[in-house]
Amino acid sequence: MKKYPRIVFIGSTFFSFFSLKKLYIKKYNIVGIITNPNPPKNKKRISIDYIKQYALKNHIPILQPKNLIDPFFLKILKTWKADIQIVVAFRFLPKVVWNYPKMGTINLHASLLPQYKGAAPIHWAIINGENITGLTTFFINNKIDSGKIIFQKKIKIKKNETYGELENKLKKISIFLIIKTLKGLIKKTIQPINQKNIHSSLLKYAPKISTNYCKIDWNTPYIKDIYNKIRGLSPHPTAWTLLFFNKFKFVRFKIFFVKIIKKIHKFPIGLVFFSKKEMKISVNEGFVSIIEGQIEGKKKMNIKNIINGFKIKKNLFVQ
Image (cartoon, rainbow, N blue to C red; front, side, top):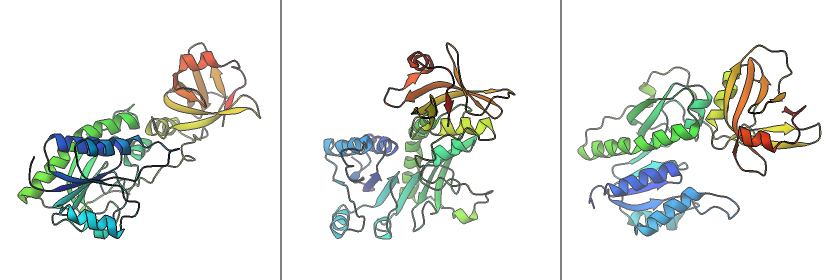
């Protein structure tokens, strides 16, 4: 096990877990782990369980503070004597935490800062139709995602790529940027860049995505915007709509994958059309054809199985 630097790892998602595991396999000296508290029993947060179980299996001390300025938490944190803290997908840290290690606290963020500061940068890059995104390591300061940039890595977003696919791609290359950052800090070769000195066009942000936002507005003027929203929310938190069988009977319908058909038509917006192998919805500029979805109370299915499950296939509409 490498003796230097002493690392405290901070994270709470599968993206975090991947980085943690790779650092440990590569024998970096992780002296402690901080993750979120266990969620209520009615909420699933499997990623926290993975991080916790990995810590216990490898005998790494772990803390799950509710309050990041709790004196007991801070007392234990100081006993770990960290040289550096690495943050991957966690909540905002108070100064008393991020300012503690002598080498600082670095954060890995899934965007090319200063663009897409916030909780959901991968989602919003796809929703906004970006062609390029990437990763950034930076020193944490007292403003969210605003510290001095250490390194960045650009990657292309494929035309049909979903949030899940892009996240997986970024996750796999994240460890290389973290290790590059660690090596630079150890050798003292890093020259951080102030974000204010980076020329950028209009800044775009990446706030947390609400359930209400995930509802599809079928009246959106451009079909491409509907398509980007669906793939930017797939597989989670997932775009959804209300599927009406009549004015009073409806179900929530999650949509994971679609293709778009550009075509001039005179049908009302939101009308659902069926054939043996196709379910398509009329929108401005054409139709959105469903490939994979999930009816409330049922499993995720491909379109053929969804169609076979419908007893009523006429006069349906979405809203």
